Amino acid sequence: MVHWTDEERDIIKTFWGKIDAEEAGHQALTRVLVVYPWTQRYFSTFGNLSKPSAIAGNPKVRAHGKRVVVALGDAIKNLDNVKATYAKLSELHSEKLHVDPENFRLLGEALIIVLAGQFGAAFTPAVQATWQKLLAVVTAALSSKYH
Amino acid sequence: MVHWTDAEREAINTFWAKIDHEEVGHQALTRVLVVYPWTQRYFSTFGNLSNATAIAGNPKVRAHGKRVLDALGDAITHLDNVNATYAKLSQLHSEKLHVDPENFRLLGETLIIVLAGHFGAAFTPAIQATWQKFLAVVIAALSKQYH
Image (cartoon, rainbow over all chains, first blue to last red; front, side, top):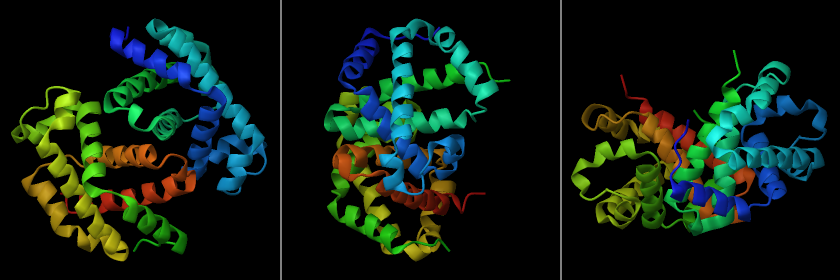
C-alpha cells in the first residue's frame, strides 16, 4: 500500500479543489496529441486532428480529456486503494483499448506541465513532487492488469 | 543533421531571449534536486540540500543552474551543429563527472515544466513540442561521447 504523508494528502486535495477537470483534461490531452503525434492513432474516430489548432478546437478531444481527469478524481478519493479502484479501468485499457502503458506516463507528464502553466509559482517543487508521486501511483495502477 | 523549420527556429530564439538564465536555471535544478532526490549525490560539495527550502536557497545550486542554462545558449547559437558544439561537454560528463545520461532527460523535462510555469498560456502545445525537440537534440549530443 502506498504511504501518503498528511502534507501530501493536503497538497493533492487542495490543488484538486482548484482544478477544472474539463479545462485541465482538455489541455493535457491536446498537448499529448500535438507533442507526441503518434498518439493520435488511438483517436481515429475523433475527426480532425490535422494540426494543433484543429486538435485544440476538437470537441471530442475536450470531452475525452474531461473524462480522463474526472476519473483521476476517483483515485484522489481513494488514495489508500488506487489499485483496486482502477482494476477494471486497467483491464479495459489492456484488453479492449490496447493502449501502450507508456501513454499513461506521457499523459501524466503533460498534466504536470498543464498544472505548472495554470498555477505558476504556486506549483512549487514540493507540490510538483507530490503530484508526480500521485501520477506514478495512478500509472502503476492502470498498468497493473496488463499481461 | 537535424532539420529545423523557420517556425521552430523562431520559437526557440524568441523564448530564449525572454529567459533569465540564472532564474530559470536555478528553478530547474532546484526542482530536479527536490523531485528526484537521488540526483543530490552529484552535488555532495554543495552544502545544505537537506530540504526543499535549503535547496532553493542554496547559492551553489543557483550558480550551477545558471551555468547549465548559459551552456544551453551555445546549442541555440549553433542549432545546425549541436553534436560538435557539445562534443567536449559530452566527454566531460562521461569521463570526468560520470553523470548518468538519464539525468539529462530529467533536467530537460524539468526545464519544460519551469517554462510552462513562467509563460502560462503563451507556452502553447506547439511551442512545447518545439522545445522538447530542441532538448531531445541537446540530450542526444550530450550522450554522444559516452562509451
